[in-house]
Image 1 (cartoon, rainbow, N blue to C red):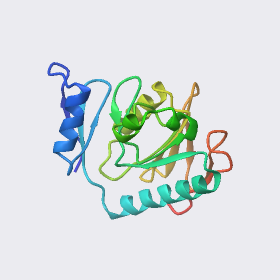
Image 2 (cartoon, rainbow, N blue to C red):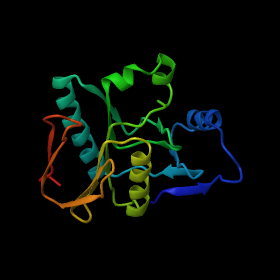
Image 3 (cartoon, one colour):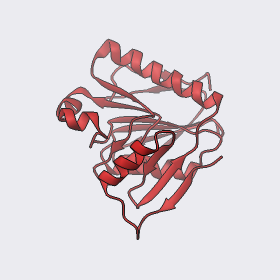
Image 4 (cartoon, rainbow, N blue to C red):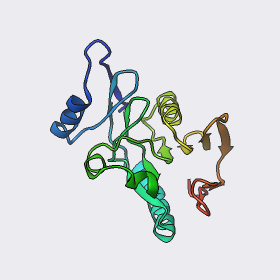
Length: 189
């Protein structure tokens, strides 16, 4: 099953209407691109599900030690500053940025871009759609992002104002200055 993409360019969908649509359809993972497309994401299979859980666990374990931010799962929709409502497979936001939001903003779709994201390509995901999604994050203020592509045995690394770097698996990945001392070992993929 692949993502279903509906064009809403000539229809329009306000933030409030999108929020209501998500609340009324909780069984579906909905996203909205900055280009006015409603994206209905298919569920992932077992392999992608446990890989995603592993990634979130590693990120959470690091964050519990450092207490530098907040970790979010793929159920969280971020209202990106340059448009789009997106749900990364794993995300991290610096604590100062998070605490600058009001309680109401934190409880809804946070109107910020994560500082760090991981997107894990499942068998049903289009690589091009994920690359476009990573670019939306970058255009909205992402500092570091990893697009993990087990099908091609590589990871695309996205950084602010830099070309995308492609690294072959297996490899270890550093959180650089965004996630100090965080290292993700991807030999298990």
